[in-house]
Length: 326
Ligand code: ATP
Ligand code: FE2
Image (cartoon, rainbow, N blue to C red):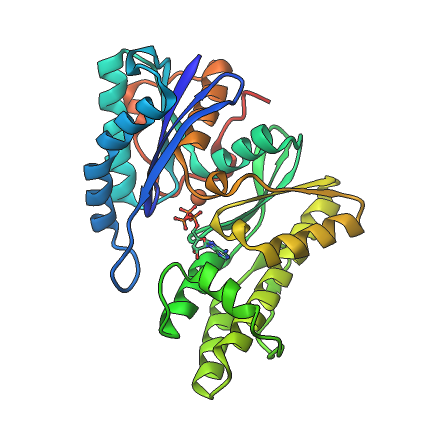
């Protein structure tokens, strides 16, 4: 059985093809790079509309699969930016109709978790999902994926991107700060904001920018921002692991590429006799393969959708998904 998945919740549009052993036959994507400022939903949607058909063709070439042999068409139904979601849903509906293959709408956050389980060998992890727009601690409990903690304001990746941008550097900010932090070492005091299982980053961002204006070195601030923000993430992840008694932690989202974050989470996990798992980088970021795989799991579990069921949901909550496949 072959599943083709289309991702397009934010700045990345991607197409993946997987088989029923979770082998990834293709995983191609393109990303909008805003010239300056943040991402414009309309511009991103136009970009996705232009790129999605060539990407579908490229995925079929890479996988050496005829599109006629695709059994399932999956797409990211939410959460995400409305115009982007609608563009991708339209492409998925058209493809599904022209191939006569069933369509499945997939929750983007659940897909990050499922691809991690499939490729990294963990069974029942707590997922620390850290991307630009999202920061959530998710785990399976009582038949659903539940959000145990999340950001109360901006995603950790957005915070890193905004800090780098305001400091006059490029996009994305995460890798720029990771490099700069290696040349920093002075731990400057920044707000450490953990409320129960939740975190907040906008106070930290403002404080870091203020210190930059006061003349602190960018490298020291990059170091301090990472240390503080990642410590907050470790604390809430550890609390969730203790609370629901899980001994695996899985990283997902673009920020999971950061080696300092991985080091801190790994240390936390070992200290409590647990293990950390990290999917390869191109499966950490937004990608079509994770959508294809989760769509296949859903289809195999009997999920069927009519075209009316494929309406997108910008605020699609993780715990709304009936996890019929576990
Ligand atoms: P979502 O729609 O899931 O919120 P997204 O569109 O933000 O996702 P991702 O590709 O998952 O997309 O993540 C992008 C984020 O990852 C950016 O904020 C970027 O700065 C961050 N990032 C990438 N590499 C690193 C790194 N090495 N260290 C820290 N952050 C990183
Ligand atoms: Fe994502």
